[in-house]
Image 1 (cartoon, rainbow, N blue to C red):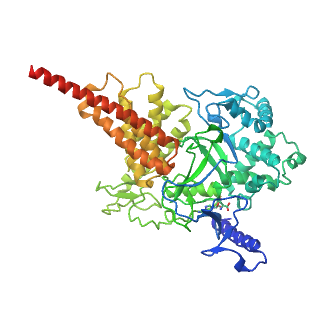
Image 2 (image 1 turned 60 degrees about the vertical axis):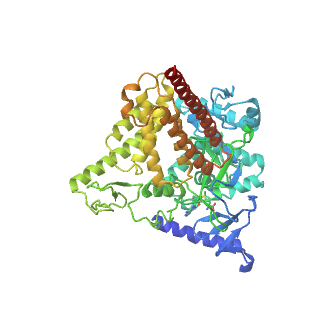
Image 3 (image 1 turned 90 degrees about the vertical axis):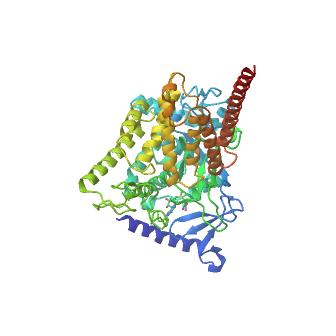
Length: 573
Ligand SMILES: C[S@@+](CC[C@H](N)C(=O)[O-])C[C@H]1O[C@@H](n2cnc3c(N)ncnc32)[C@H](O)[C@@H]1O
């Protein structure tokens, strides 16, 4: 069955459920705005500034009833369930997600040796949930065929918590009603998702020690369809749990935040800015407006990385969420007469214009500015390099955590080969990964080299350039990458290497670099105040670093003054 017919089926289904929800009540009893029925907020308890409407083709969606300025918090809540991912399980507290550091140590659960906590208070808070989970984790480890799979994946651990919480909270509770109201794609499951759903369902049953239908009944599951619904609700509505600097650290579910529909040109973002200051309230999840949202406007977040080209965004959305995005960006209604900066190469005549790589279909690449066309062999060579770079990006991303040195060699080699605008896929991805790997190398080396620092800074500037062309101001990814660049510029260059190359140095050294670091950090603060809201943890970190640099500048100015004064004393005597 084609995707279009699946979508049409869903539309028909939406229309049916709409009729059902209005029942036999007269039409004028159903509140409508712009023709869309307003759905009662219950059981969500949304604030007065928000309302839920039912779209004809995209299910329930959130609308604003007030003006949200860029940087204002649209919604703030603690997720219903969250778990730390397998790769971060020993470095983040299972309860509040605080990361291990020089000042924070984590203690491991002595029974399962899987969950880690930053304090006794966090361990106690998690105990009612962890107690049965602890038994499941131990049983799972005992029967694991090898140590590499001794801990179940985060989807299975998260769903284990969902089922146990449903039982604990009660099937008629608000908590369970909210969870059950989340959309399931069971009826229109994309074929690509069926295999992974089955795999998760099998693993879940094994993890919970369920051996027959009675075991499932205990968790309120009366049919295989119920189980598919629960897995599908998870995949369609879960969020990547991230640190305050957007590093992925786990997975979580909030039925309220999940009410927001998707656009590749969104007006709001979902972040975890750690605003509470009290670990026991964390993780706090927020929807933040990064554009003006007027009363009566739909609140739209993005489920995918919007710096990616359309074909990759569409593929992700189809496979995981079962729909084809029809936003202005995807449908080419964004009034952009140039090549898509997310997927393009430079003009063959180097006029500064770009040729689009989107919808190529054997056509000749043509410059949008001067209409010059690529020769067949040159075009083949360019496309080969794009393919090669795409594969290298995928491979290096997989190796980022397990073998960062090898990943760094791959990005270094590939960056020397690709020549396309910094904003374009796969170059932007390679540049972002390259900076991250260089930062890892700088922080893990006992003798970091100035060459590595310089390369990280120059690459950081290229990333800025690229992101600027594909993400709007205030997007959290822009703020984070400016902050990283500011921190690199603020680092003291390693001693002993700098003098002989100073004249040709890009970026500058000495006080000029300090000034550049400060202006970059001020810009980062502006962007972060929008993308994470003013009370985000990172805004405080930028302020602290700016104060430190201010003091360095004072010391440096005083030093110059001293030298000048000493000089004038010498010359006057
Ligand atoms: C996280 S849920 C959003 C809330 C959902 N509309 C509901 O009624 O519960 C994601 C699902 O909403 C629908 N959806 C979200 N954004 C959409 C869009 N732009 N176009 C079509 N469907 C969309 C898709 O079915 C998707 O799988």
